[in-house]
Image (tube, rainbow, N blue to C red; front, side, top):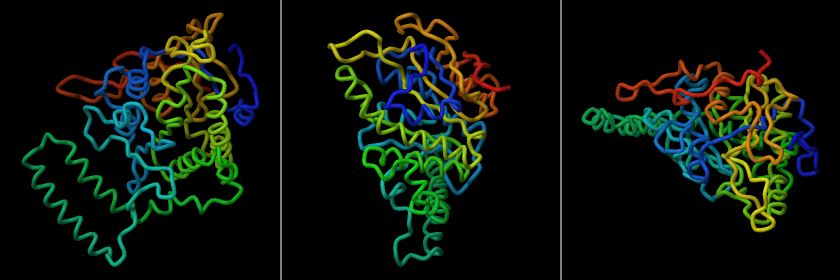
Length: 357
């Protein structure tokens, strides 16, 4: 499309067009979901590399030691393609991997200490478990997973003090809950995730990733109008609410919001009423975090199949995201087996048009 169209399906997000920078010329290498999702998360169509959230956590650390630095949530029980590979730390120490929490009434299972167990008893059990784990770890120094498990137990203990308040949406006003669509069946599920994301960011969680349509529900090879109408209705209001809420709280300038998928859909029909995968020209948008809103960047060809103007590969997108976070994609290095590894595989350029400065 040559312009951001305002329809009933996008009515809420369209109200925030002055905050959004639409990139119409994205492209990727993956032609199926597994490789596409893998590259959008890690920069490579092949598994085994750290996710972008892991790189951000490695480069910036955490602002709140009582909560995870990198949190992942998905909107249903269906597993997102590739599962935990998408938020894996790859060859980095496992402590940089994302922590998945749920979006239901109990976002973090078993968070509360069992009745009758005092804090002293809980601390004693954890100390004993840590002593055993560290004894084993000394014999196996190369197993970063064990070190990550030890760290996760310590984090879980600290979370028992702060996390219950962080994930308690009942503390929000009725007006805020309505803003995210928690009062409407179609928007309640993703609305909870968006509101949880704001509460976590507000409390110093570095990187929050939400999956909508888990289980490739956006994969409309047929009945695309019916499929996308339903999915857009479920996410439009909550995402608009997130932008509005971040802006009202003074958080949008320091919080980068990114929306998009692993690829787009073809302009030509499939099965008469569907569309196939299209990694050669698709749209994403960003808002906040220093991004200059109210603009569109790039264009596809006349039929909307190939990106032809201001083309942004996934590596360019990742370089731009890291730039917004204050990190250089070429200076952020992790040495793995003597090799200097970088988040964009030594490729990619920052899209200067995205930013105000």
